[in-house]
Length: 68
Image 1: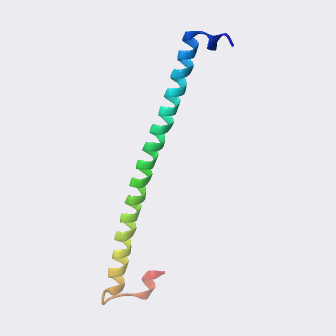
Image 2: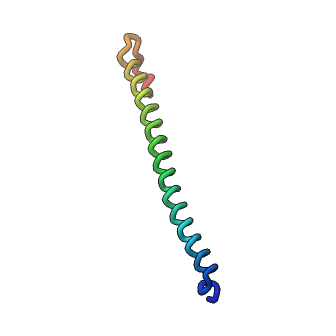
Image 3: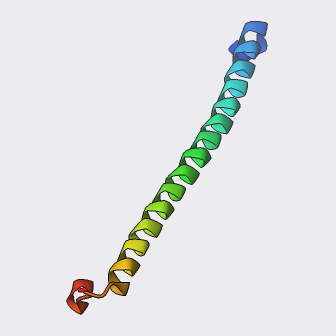
């Protein structure tokens, strides 16, 4: 193609490639941050839920049918 033989075409191609690589790296970085934060939030919620279930089981007025 004649477009990639000109300086303007080459600069455009390099810009698109560099911008695309930077966008992929940035997107991967953001995804990893939000995925870790989401996992941490779920883990905290599960710990709180397990603690409340444990407290209910340890209480004096425990009813076994609550586990169903």
